[in-house]
Image (cartoon, rainbow, N blue to C red; front, side, top):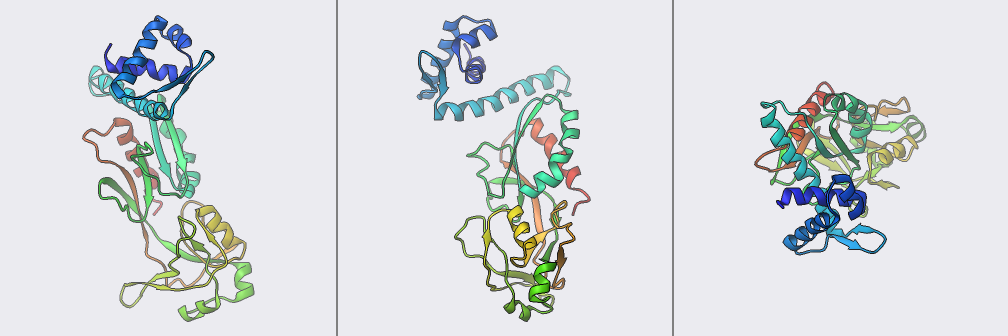
Length: 299
């Protein structure tokens, strides 16, 4: 039995949780299913399932291998279909992406139906946190990055830039006054944002109108948050000033007012990032091209 076929059988066992059910589902002997799994375990040098008389459960290695199997099988089927269809294969398989919270909620998910209507055989897994994920280790096909990509081993497709704004709630400004100059910030509070709680925030950032240099004003604050929704809500609650891009409806809020427009933080580059591969799956290429249309006109 070739390894691709063994991987197909293994994936079905992982999904059904039973050697017997897999054999019935695929029209195979139970011994054939068992031998396929044993062949993979022998090749890999690790146990893929915990087996009891009542159930079959994936090990930690088995779960990781199953996730990659799904993608490899989809790539294999996509490649075969591409040539069989003369270069016009239907996209199939799983697409796993990571998006910042505001992008997922306001820009991407509302338009996903149109993408899936074009590619009905695709299955999409969307992770939406503001944590910087490990694209390779966590098995993502691509991730949307705001700001510097950081890892030079990754391929970044630029999608544009988002301008940043300084904002405070009307209630906060009524209580503390509206800052007109950088010196006024000494009497104000900043809502601090840090991806890792405990990290030291940089303060109020701005681009010097005179030199174009990135500068920072240290500011006090009573709260530090690590995701974009909490950042906005802390501002709305009157806990301080924030500096944020206008993403979707993120800052389209009558309770928030722009302040110090001459001292904005630098605009943020937006990139779709994927691992350096010799052959990028067609489903990933299609998603990248679709994301370009989603982001166009949003900058």
